[in-house]
Image (cartoon, rainbow, N blue to C red; front, side, top):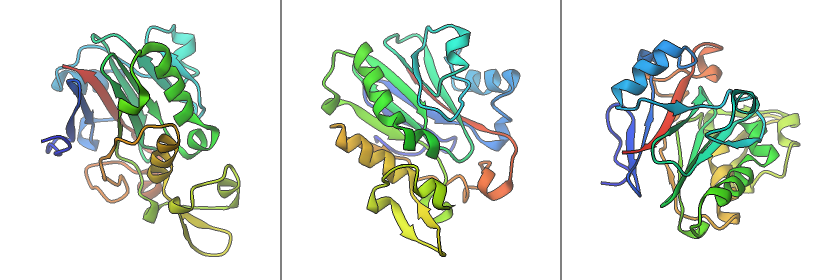
Length: 224
């Protein structure tokens, strides 16, 4: 059934798209050997992953290494290439069309800067489909109840009221996943699947907010 969670954190999306998320046991996905081993275990031989600089730049999957090193998302019309995004607490966003695929790393800085709109705009350049018929998937990330932020974050954009819960003075609990969903809806994309997994609370996953700096997981999406 669509949306059912596999024990190995794998989901089936429309148009034959698979999404998977690695665990601590799969190793730090920034390590080339660990990444290739995990992808091979999912049946994936090639995956394009941007370096991620907590920005808003989206590039095409066939971009050169320089462009990928300065991007936080990728799009592709090729069915032969998987797309990926690293993450420890920042959720990954997948957009699926019948003729294209897009993935972005959505930390608070990127979401504040408009990365959701940038990913939608980039998808429009490779897809002839109506965005209203696209499917969005939001992967694991720190949940709003675990993510207290301070005034500089709160001032970075107008956050949706539904994404904020009052906390101690000058702080609030921020739901980044809810913000992504609201941004998508404002762009006409209302079919949004949230995986519902909090990296802070799931013992299979590494959370910088919970454990401090360390390894990162990867979200990968591919057609198969």
